[in-house]
Length: 337
Image (cartoon, rainbow, N blue to C red; front, side, top):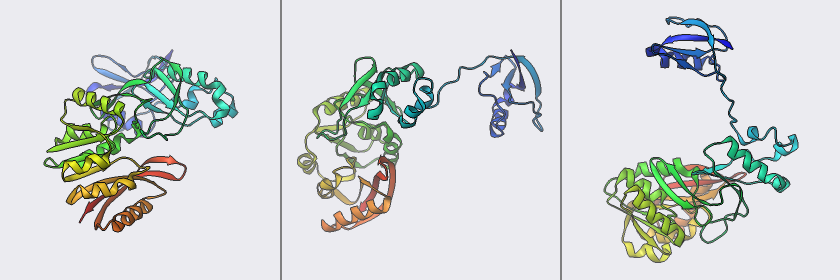
């Protein structure tokens, strides 16, 4: 089958590709071709690019296999219209494991949904269905393997770091990748940093890898998470002081810190007194909680710190994901005065 293409010199290819994209002229269903001197862009219609040396030619083309862009699209031929309407709009991917929540009315189709994900998205080898909320002391939840290999262990890559974990026995959210990077970017070289509720180590390892602070401590009470964190520190070749235990008991033993990260939105307020007692004057805390908006989070922080007798300066308040409809995970960055 032949189709019209725009013949472009290789050295002009990227510039012209951008121009064609801006005016929506590239046919994304057809493969772009190249030879030693030219690039051939498949066109939706013939066009003459003003002020450019190009030529419209008709050549043999190769159709690209259309790749589904969503879970719903991957299942449109396997579920009814009613079922597609109640299907979750998205799913999380940790390493090569997909995690999704399936409504009760679709549980009889869970294997179809799981297998469709594996067939469609080649980076997925295991599909887990959520079985319970995050309610345990270690922030873990119940899962059921509905497709793929019989395992819950994986390796996740993020911002140049590698994290091994068991999703069933440790907590990790891939949705917080950019938020972890935001925090890491603020760390100064000579700081002493503490990460409470450190999990498998994503905050501490990212900070250590890119900022190399004077010292960084990570406290976690889940023994499985601590075991993986130790392994991840070795894999990423960074220096992190790992402590297994309760932050209330361990933090006071470590002296004063310039920066403390508190990524436990559900109960973080219960540990703010411990953090403040270990924070240097002008030190910064990154405090996470669940609120309806940023102002509510800020008022929550002000109320707690005032009741504890501390004066603070709010630096920022950032939405970093939703918890439920109308309720968000929010980080308040503040400085102790």
